[in-house]
Length: 142
Image: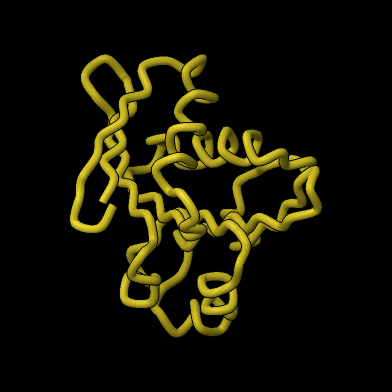
């Protein structure tokens, strides 16, 4: 999907499972997916739906205070959920070992990735979420 843009609209929470399937299909074998958008746009909610599709057996919660949550799937695979909202600079990302997560083989879902944009693998899926006039969520992929 290099240099291609795609848009997905989630008009209702009941559409989340299908949206999660679509996001995984668009990602293909790319494992780093970065979610940007304002507070309340639904980043964590969408990541929960994706983790559910991947068969996460752990409870998926926001890593706002822990920065990184690790979930195990039914297949024994690890999924990382990272929230960088509280980081002040890129050095703090290095301090938590961000590169190990970005360049491993596990799925890595990142909220508020702007502070580490220069570290994201080139092939990462970048999703910008906005809220539409009818409260739908509009996901722009690049």
